[in-house]
Length: 117
Image (cartoon, rainbow, N blue to C red; front, side, top):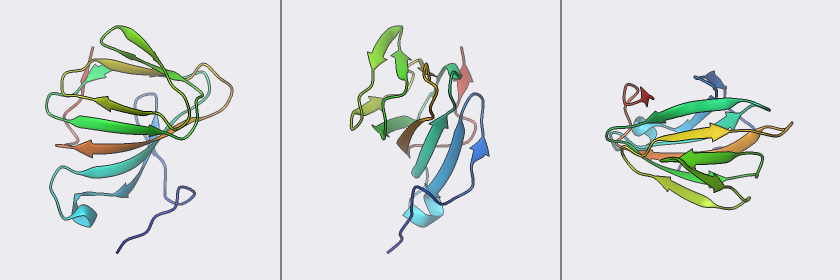
């Protein structure tokens, strides 16, 4: 058994976002699988990008932002779940004065599978 808490862990800076990795492929005993928490800071954008092989499933802890997926604005509510499939172009916008927080379950994950559009 492994246990994590959303209040623990070190934030790692990405391009327009921060992430905390709770369970990595070693923890999960499966290559390419990872559980992260993502934070988009107030009034920030994680710019448009896609992944060739990776699927992402997001569970939203609050509603302080929205996504644009393949050109379509997706309004987020707390508790929503969104799946981003390989090659779905997506960006994340925090249009509030509070952190936009969500969990990200990733499959077929590799560090280099990100392409900025």
